[in-house]
Image 1 (cartoon, rainbow, N blue to C red):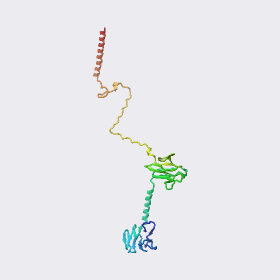
Image 2 (image 1 turned 45 degrees about the vertical axis):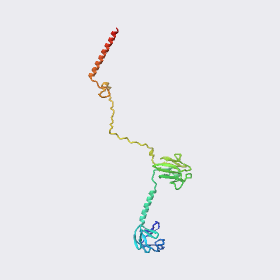
Image 3 (image 1 turned 135 degrees about the vertical axis):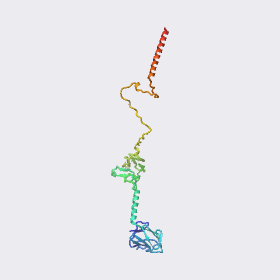
Image 4 (image 1 turned 90 degrees about the horizontal axis):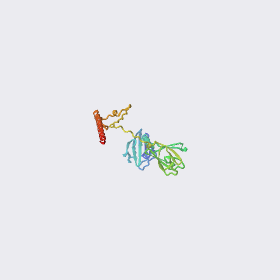
Length: 293
């Protein structure tokens, strides 16, 4: 079943019941309109279930339906607008309006719902029975009823302090309160707050609950991948066993930093050279002795 109402008033609607309703200035009408251009009974709406027909009973005074003049009769549908003089009427489907109202209410609730920040205050004072106060992105704590966290404490200022979450971090700012804001026992004007800290507004103490402080963690850099162009060479272990002589353990090769390897012929030449030098030395010494005699 459909309704008809004033366009600017959602709460004063008239059911369109069979067989018809009338509209005009007279109090006998189902819908009474107060306009100098309206007659006592100016319009009637014929109702057949949800099929509607509008009849203009005063053809000399046109009625507009969706901006089109109607001198006789026309069909009406939901959401049609009827204008008579300065009066605007609207045909509505209550089921559709209720559905739209629910959707609008749901959307408004979602818009009003505070974004979860993960931060909250847990009251340490016995008077507050360990209550937990979830924090929005911006919160004002104080004695005034309009504060986000309103507490009836005599020594609390009306707007005592502000708590704000910025990039996941919580900050407190004293709003020129009379009795001060304290972080871990120290009075502050503005400071960053971490999980596990104690916030005190005058005598009201709160424990801070929130995400861990990622800024305090040390970043661990991943190990660089091995380069395929660098081949790791392992130093061979020294062979265990009896000691070997220098001559047998060193293998000298040409072009290395060590002396070149000698052949047997070269070693024989060396021996003959030493013998020759010895003979020369004996001859020289003998000659010197004979000369002195």
